[in-house]
Image (cartoon, rainbow, N blue to C red; front, side):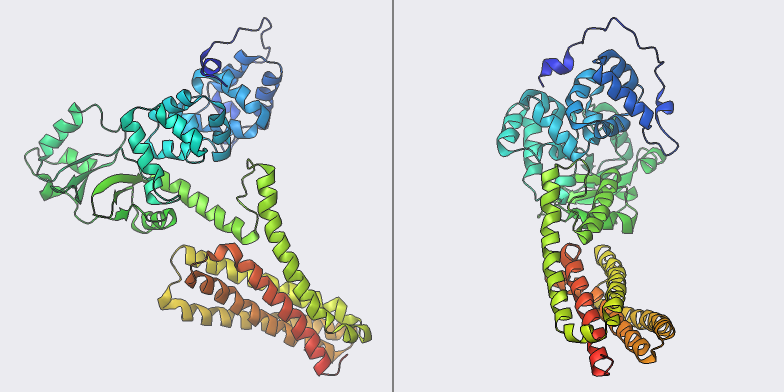
Length: 477
């Protein structure tokens, strides 16, 4: 798609649409999502090449809703939609687009158009737009940018992915701590190049180290002649530029921050992170952990199919291997199963319930690790807690399934065996559900990625082994 494609006015169609264009409020349902009939109207207009009607339909929408529309139309319709809405395809829409959708559109644009868009975005949004491009495409876009904007974006790209350096914005207001309130107000009014939106002013010393902050509400209420160092808030949360974005989000949540200063290794102020950026991080990290536990990859419905297949197939192959291990345990007792066929009927209950119990514990522990609730100081307390929970649940389930089995099959010994196996496997599930993720975390391995494989393997193997082994030891089989 060329720059001319985006900017030219497409010719009007002779036929006019009979349906009246609905306002934005009528395009959204009660949960503030685009209605299905509205999306179908846009798609029908695209199919009929009625580009003026597409424009009229989309014009009332908020930029975030326009970004949602790009996700809801088919992949082959997105470039045509971008051409159709012309000037509505502003930087606000680009900033709100899903990563995969944005990458598709950006790759289709010439380098000079992408550079023009990047220069209008905040630094953090521009970095997010360019970071997924190939190195060659990145350099082509950067070459088209103004030197100052290019330097800022190159600096952002130099930091590790998912770090504070990638997340921060370089648009902030910093003034000397010796400035008076009146001087600061005059400074804010006179300098047009300041950020359009900010909530606090950072006060810095002679070495550009942040020493405090002044909220705009304070500045407006204070007399003009008071120095900033008398009214600024000296306690502040500083974010190291290399900090992981998940830890950044936890600090914002813990200290109820609206914005925070980002400092380099020498303690100099180099940027700020605002709460609107952190909201996206919290959403991404929460969804990422849930998807990693299931081995479903990124879980983005806009992700290319082959990438999704590759991510899921990898873990399915691993699970196939663990299933073979579990089945080999069953193979050790095939003679006992042949002599007493009821064992084959009942043994999936033990392993299945253990797997469910292990998954419950694992989900709680991974969340506790991610939110810093589980630390060195309370690990053993957490282990004891999960042991007691597993013992209680296992006993309750054991009594329930044991009594039912004894009554149903008229075999009290069989009921006792399955009840004991249920208790044993629930204890294994509880301990594995906490010990596996804690151990992986100590080894600097993300516990959300591979914990479920080890936990389900442990519960399957011990579920089969405890039930069948007890059946043989008691002479049941």
